[in-house]
Image (cartoon, rainbow, N blue to C red; front, top):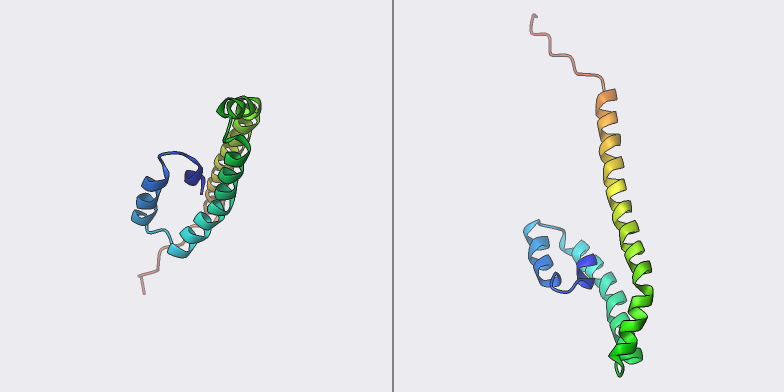
Length: 106
């Protein structure tokens, strides 16, 4: 979903997702959600700033710190969730009693 917003990564993402055997319906769902955001966003930006690229650059520079903070927060959230899941799985594995070997003495 994020690759749709990053220039140059959209096409390679399709190959990567296909190669990893990601479920087709999930890909369509995520890509469709991203398209529902990105298409209107680019149309609106073109409408507002299409005639004055200098004004667009000035507006983007005013909000660049917020965009960077948002991206960093998102990355921290994803990494934190991944780390927390691994930690919880390790604790669950440690709490599980070890299986006793079968008694072959019978």
